[in-house]
Image (cartoon, rainbow, N blue to C red; front, side, top):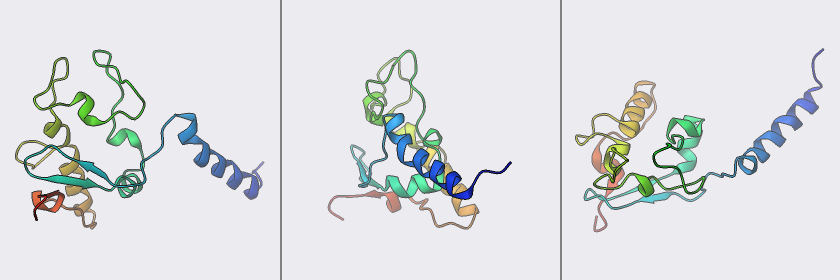
Length: 133
């Protein structure tokens, strides 16, 4: 027996509205400023990335036993420092892409999106903006 479409839509709406509360997390609405790199500040529009990725786990990994999270929405730089502080092995820049900016979490995804016909930036200066520029 199929469910009434109105009941089905109401269930989806409730799940969508309550899931951030249930998991104790909510996506930031304002763009994040990723600072501390010599290449310049990266303005990261979180909301547009969540629309493309769909799942938080694509970018955010689970807590590791050797370095448990202090809060559900911990900043990458809380664990990924430059240079990395043991037991963490991946420094802050490497958490996003390799030193040449040719592969890694961000750049590999951007290249994949471009191959699908989307316009994702792949040049350093497209994301890294100098303060005086």
